[in-house]
Length: 345
DNA sequence: CTTCTTTGACCTCTC
DNA sequence: GGAGAGGTCAAAGAA
Ligand SMILES: [Zn+2]
Picture 1 (cartoon, rainbow, N blue to C red):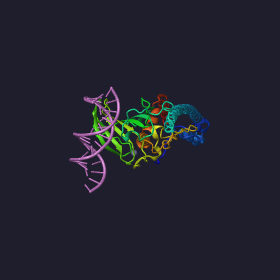
Picture 2: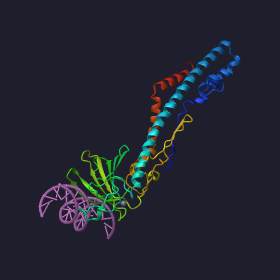
Picture 3: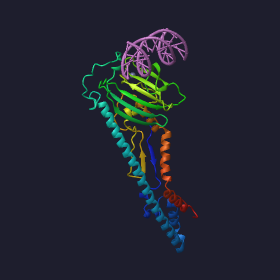
Picture 4: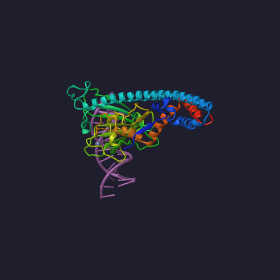
């Protein structure tokens, strides 16, 4: 989607334009009226009037300089806050990217904790082919808050306790849904066919069993069950990996198909060289992108959609405005400056 | 008619 | 080997 970048042009006052020397006749907007009137009326005014005006001008210039310093200071603070946040996000991004690279880079080469396990002992084993179709031991747990778009991922390597790693990728996703919704449908972009439902011992709500219906040969299954503690949360457990591309649907963001919630799907660029702060939320995060690899993509798509949405961008602008207007010193000085600039004050 | 869901029966596993 | 639980099958019904 080609949403225009969010550009917060905070041109409350450009320090470079606020040199007191400029406030004579070519001054910037705030003192232009006074300066120009002083210049144009100079020939016909008395010495006293000229002195009064000059004193006033000096006073205004001094206030202007102080205000400029204050604004510059505030800009500095805002830039620092944003830079700190950016650093934090980048660090998180890097960490998750490494995790994903590790997880997906080790599919043919298991992590040290699971590698080198001897040939599985010939213990009891299910005869059905449902257990041997996939290719890793990875267990991934994801908690997703659909209502807020928050997404938390915990990736865990989990070899089976008896050492019989059957290379099944298991992923658990917790999704918050409407408690009144009894359908147990978790929208993850894939097509599922329900093949069973069962009431389990430790949970009063039934567990539904789904198979991937997009490709007949796809081995992926998922189990969906409401959380025993919170009926508004459904836990979906995915087993196996899809052997086909994700079905694309209208409204999805191709640029945001980041696997495993690894990277923040937007870049934040701060142009601190001037007073214009630009937050570019349309670029991709530059993190690892693994297409056709799993079900965590809806998380990031959701985040992408929210970031790109007018609501999010408006909220961002409002937050920036709040940050500025929330500073008492800033608003006081601004109000005082405005009052002084008004005629007859 | 086709496709999907429901649901009871059956199978497998673990204790 | 039996019981209990989880997982799957497949017939029947619904859409
Ligand atoms: Zn599939």
